[in-house]
Image (cartoon, rainbow, N blue to C red):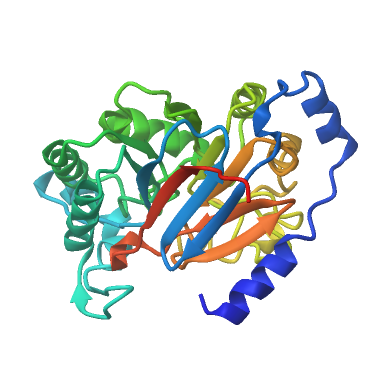
Length: 338
């Protein structure tokens, strides 16, 4: 992102969002715990390197976040599914590295990115959706082996392609549940696929699956409980949250999101978005997150290019696609008052 676009993004994002009465009532059911983190601290971004500063961070540490690797490895077990996987199996066979421009591929990029995490002594790696172009057994086994070899803890949440066989009958909720259970479950290491949290040195890393653009009531309740801890939070989602002036496809919570505005369902051979638009739960989640005093930032993927929006003081940073080597190196530091 060049300097002019970065400034425009911050200026637009800082406008903030209107909070409907229903959302305000929801978050006020249980007021967030008093926290020394009410001062959110600050952040900086230099290329794909991000730093968060906050007085509640117990000690300096770092993590690495990636999304959209779009692995397409398959074998004999996937032959009977080729009618559903054929388009995405050809989508990212050869790519150009996001920094060097050299010809590469998703597997090579994934391995290089894990090596970067290892070389930088990352506390953990966050895999935030669309690691797979479809739920291939061979690709899932390959990733599990690579993660085992690197020896670092990791967190995984699904993206819209991870569980999607294009043209297969069923709603997004049904297909997501089916392929998480039948294929993706090893990636979760026993954690709840829809929502999970890890804490490192006073920072809570919350992963929420919004891969069908919607938020479930239990996910919303989970998020409120995390906000009520009063601890610093990094929220990790595959699909970023809608920010002012962003497109329909960009984010979860766009006011105009509905079947009438869905332009990709035929290409992706899936059911269109809901005719009635987003649920009240999804819109309430959106408003609650952007009014929370202790969310340091949001990390997301999905759009395949790096972007920054700041909404109500909360930065949302989207990574370049890992299929092209993209990732975010994220550092956390104790804030020093000037």
